[in-house]
Length: 311
Ligand code: OGA
Ligand code: MN
Image (cartoon, rainbow, N blue to C red):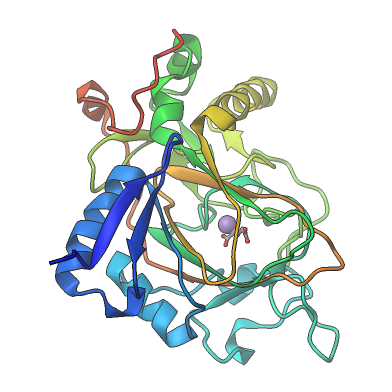
């Protein structure tokens, strides 16, 4: 009998496609295997017809308990309020404007810098489940995902020593396209600006392996270092991690679903044709408290981070 699905690893530093006839018809047993494949490959792609929001939420529930997108108090200015939306658990990411001129979703048409979803909250998401409903057919809008196990594995020794055991302030002033959140003052001092702290090297609660956990570059701060040293270390960390060698870039078709693990990846979006319409719906699942277990370093590397260490 033909299996109801097949997992095909992508020829990059992370990612696998789950090939199946209809994601809505997959059994719970299938999802047990698919969940393990997600831990093994960090991001999964499904292809198929566009799903309704309830079906997208059903799929996302296999990757954890659904949680609200950016809480209203952190939403960027000028966006429709969460509680005014049909499905408040669905995040719309779009450059399209409604009849009243208000964007129907976030992030506009510009580049979204490398980031990890909701790292500016105490319990950053486990999974983000991003689904394409309308895609520009001219240019841009690809979404890149990075393998942060591999980034840590290959980190130069001195840089690793600088960050070992330290925490990073995940500033919440701006979203990934540089829009200010509500209520943030004009001048920002990275040492005291609002946002939670998370370990820079983070232990993944399910694989038990350590990964580089950066959040987003803008206004980040490594606690305990003078600001200029923190800036230098952050620049070096981002330069090291945000490389094509560690990335998979997804070129969207309508109906595609990309599910990434926020605990061990970062993602990025290319700018796209402002004349074109792009509409994405995202569901997301609840994470757990971040922590660092120094002993996890001594375990075998993650199977998808087998790149040679550069030090
Ligand atoms: C997100 C995100 C990028 C994109 O959904 O968290 O960053 O490609 N999206 O829309
Ligand atoms: Mn994001």
